[in-house]
Image (cartoon, rainbow, N blue to C red; front, side, top):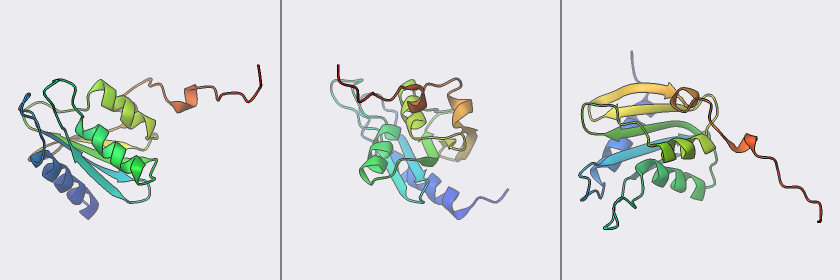
Length: 142
């Protein structure tokens, strides 16, 4: 199967982001790259600190950059880490991705050699809770 140029670029962006990780405590670098619904691209790495484990996940950083740029929908997200096992997003990041996803959002779990598995958001986070579950606040005065 031939990879699209966008897929290769996002994979490479995630790999480049992973190489910039600041992970002196876990020794586990992670990179992420997002393609927004409007075709914009954002990437980030995990950043740890001495109050470990109070760091920032790569996915959270990329989502923050996307939101700062005015984007609100993830089309594809590539998450990359080392090791033989799948490096899937943590629970908190699954919920963060879900906030900006729809049923077509693809999550690509990668290792340095390539994409290991691709899932849609409903496969990654089944029976999820999202913004549509919240009742909008009423404008009634008490």
